Image 1: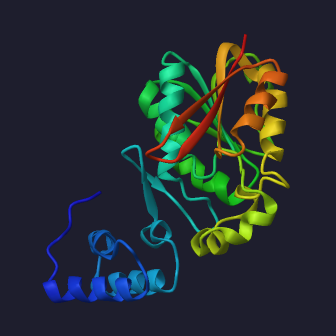
Image 2: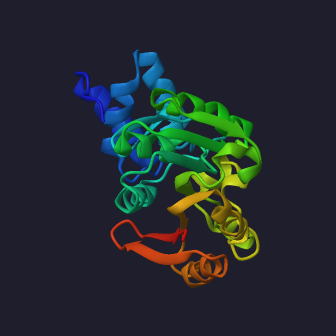
Length: 264
């Protein structure tokens, strides 16, 4: 988080009060971030107004922190979650020497950018079906020399990646369709349905990834997918039935569940 420029206490206090009244649980922290990001008092006032109206904080300031990186986010693009940092940690631990990385269902490109930062020079490809996500991801993976492709899962990727991918990170949508309405308003109202809705049991896209992943992974390469505790047993079985050696990694602190499939 950037250092905060000196702001008159009354201004900071008024921002905190406005945010707290709107129901922001971490009003003090959000006020600090808004005031540090805004270039003028007028811009700060506009940011506060948009946050009070319910816009996610990351969209208000235009970026999200992810594993120490400042990831640009934009309206209509899935905001990276802190729990997904656990997926990145698992990928780096499993394949620390990976030279070819794919970030599938990339959204903002946060996972790909974080993997490249952790691995060093890699051949990085990211893909998403949503044009808004593709535009956003291109900026976030540019520093790593990443390539971003638009299309439906593996159809978007260059064919010469088959059999070469060391890490395939697929942050697929996994919310069951009839549970979308239970999500926090910030997600329901401001994030694309295609990045949230995983079908009847939430595993439709995961099944498609599991079916195709073995053709794209290098020998010993791994595919990692985030899921829920309830879905994990089915996800593990799906990976195994597609010829992958499957493992489940869990972070109780982050409430994160990552299914890992390793190619023979």
